[in-house]
Image (cartoon, one colour):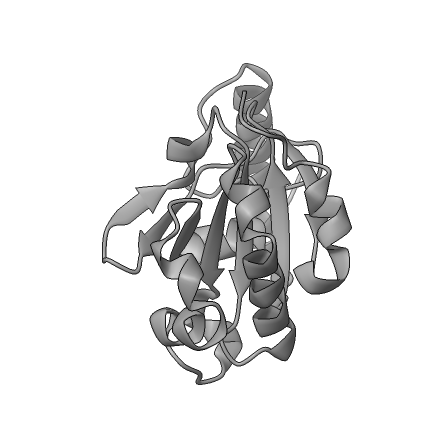
Length: 191
């Protein structure tokens, strides 16, 4: 028997915590919807690409789910990053090949631009690969915090995921200028 009021409160707190923990475990096992405290899914290789919003350069909020059914790339860049500029030039060099395919490349400025100032996305694209701004296979925009947290939890300044038409993430890498051969394996001519 617990005699001290302090020990009694500790015992009650432990019992309450145990009941809450057991209840949330049972709810999860029963397939109950996630609670507000659950963490959103993070993009992982061979996993299903989680949906998340971003804002296009035109100010339209778009969701990644809108691209499912077709292959697409989510490429997160910072506009002050030399590797990102080199990657965008590499995509421009392969523009004709991409235009013959069903691939869409989402070029998204990292949420808060990696923590450093830099040009806006339009100025970055205009100074690096202006022809891509009018190409329907390239969509330029800005990460939302949700997209950034799901697709770039380690806060890399240059990271991309190749997502197949079935919504599965097939490749995670960085620096397209150095890894374009990996991307090229996913660029198939339009049927």
